[in-house]
Image (cartoon, rainbow, N blue to C red; front, side):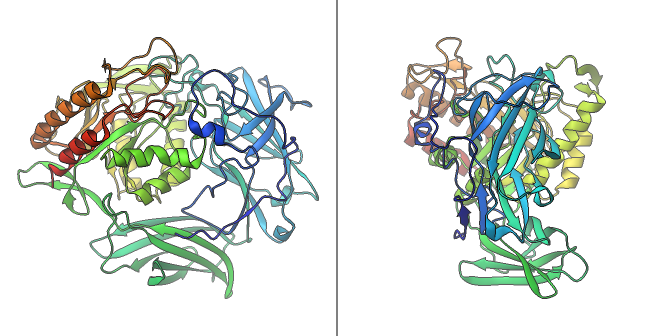
Length: 604
């Protein structure tokens, strides 16, 4: 999709000295992209390509920050500068300080709204802030948000003044001293648990919109009917307002439809070009909102015609299918962590790097492990052609003050506090709402390895009902119940089928973990581990290929997908295919690609 953006920078200014000295701090690993960061142009790409407008302004860059005791008043003076959108614990923030349950993090900056936006509503967007956020504009608290993984926004128009606007953000994040979703964050990181991420960690930006505007676009393809369902949410609309959708293949208009702003539409796409990892074709979408015949909003988007389902093969084995054909999904466990930015990739090139290297190695899928990525990551997957299994970044079972064990049918589940259960349900719904539009996502994973696993059947059934267009993996490697679309077993280091379900798809949700510590590319000098360890790339590749041949036999016995641990090293884990700093590929690329292709082709 061609860019049609006007990126406003001239009038968006920080109170901080834009020429102030900034550099990554600490003695930990850095990626090559750390040295390419421009403090005046941090992550400058449009942050939400699936719903794109022509005008916007980036608020990333140097802000002021302060860390205070919980409950203290807004500070009059600040401790220094922080580079947004990098978490306060990260090297790239320029701060690298811990927060914890007894502290609050404050941010401050000023900006000016471009003069040609004066007749528009101004939306302030946050890609993600971990965890509890309060936002103040010109001395007025304008809103709050709970959750560390999803975008949120405010209409700041009523609170704007003439001249400079003062924006203050307050964040509290107890990490594993709280009840919220944290993924693998830990206040005392070790082993498989990683450094906490607190505060702003995705792009902050503003954009002008009309009083009547489009707020979200979701598409659901039906390749059998040759149609695309288009749901458009709007703000400020009334009876008589109309949405127009135009579907294009390049410059060619494929289909159009008009519908009332409070309705949805189904547009015909005959002889559709189907999306797959081998051919990731995307249709361009243009959406126009009209009121009394006058254009109110114009949004560019995209959609894909693809189907994810399951069905029995010639031998009666339940298989995952892509576009109505048996299709083996093979991919790495992807933690999405960076040694310098933690949750945040240093640049968009870095964000794309892992995806492209995954494809180069012959994989067709990524399991996004207990983390949610910025919108651009999912668009990269859509464009590059990679299937995505999306995990819920659930809280872990070690929060003993918040959890209570209970025998439940054939396994154990957690009894959550009322507060914790409500938080899980809210955040999982928010994550699904955020990610529904992305065609690369084909599987939802509500639980991992029984971490905080509760009411599994209820949660799996709700997830399926909320989005019936995708498969549901109820508990990857966790306590198993006959619910959802698949049975997911984990086995390290070699692949093994410890369970099989004849009524659902059976998958190997994790295996491998072949370790190779490389001097000069380690997060820490000792306590580095993998499930097994070798001395060089040839030995690692030999073992990987051996596991691959074993896996092919297990595919014939019933496996329909496999997830190898893991894409990169992460902190003390050295079982990545790539070093944590992304500087060394630790396997022989051609051999890995060959065995991966052989695995995938075994079901064709």
